[in-house]
Image 1 (cartoon, rainbow, N blue to C red):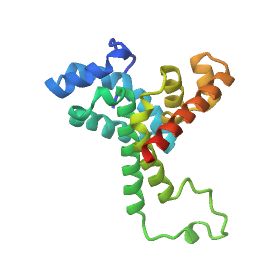
Image 2: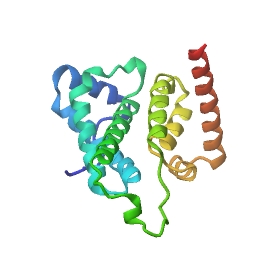
Image 3: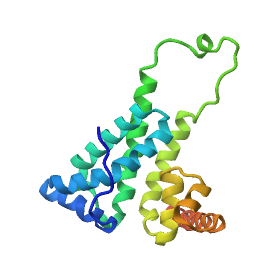
Length: 196
């Protein structure tokens, strides 16, 4: 799979591109979406898996889902990038589930006879809780002010460090942290409102 350079479409038109794909099965619009999002999804996959092959598989599955499910995208509920990265996260969870179900009958004791186990990432229940929480947050995420939404997307969806976001957006580290804090407060209030 070749991941090309920047496309010619402007970032404000991703929602339109998804609509063209949904309504007209527009291959040119899909190619532009692919050109823009594939490198970003690959970077996301590399951080998640630490393995290029798995990252590329995640990109392929995600973009195939974008093609097949473009008609499900609703611009009134959020921006295209949030929708696409949500698909990527779900593909990642599916890949992790498949990987766990395919494990051989080798126990950890066979691999680490001295009992020195590596740190485990998250338990399955933690992953499910995170996925369920993200599904509850998704509708509220897009109501954040653009500056806060951008920082949250980079930190939580792209899993970049606060310093990386500060460097990338050319804003002070304190501003990144303030935007995250304010966004989390807004999201917490939105969740509290939906529970009551």
